[in-house]
Image (cartoon, rainbow, N blue to C red; front, side, top):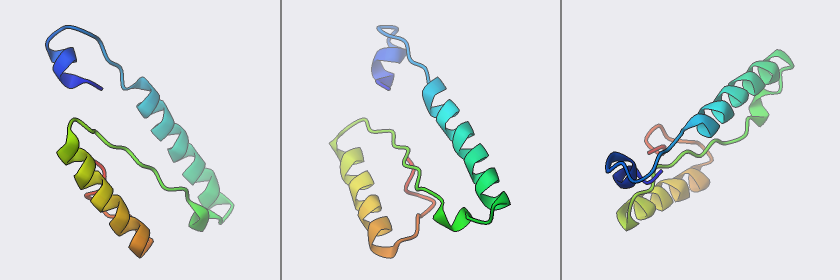
Length: 77
């Protein structure tokens, strides 16, 4: 979302798609655990990119995740 434009009242924004997706993913995890296949849990990527510095920081974090195979708490921005 272009927060500068939202805060300047030039446009509107909604996080509904993001929230809906995360709720559906929570339901998916519930059923995956129920059927004992939670080890196949798909990765979720949520990023708030505002400038080139954010892109570089996110890319570096994602590379660490790919190298280790484990997500880190600080990856989501």
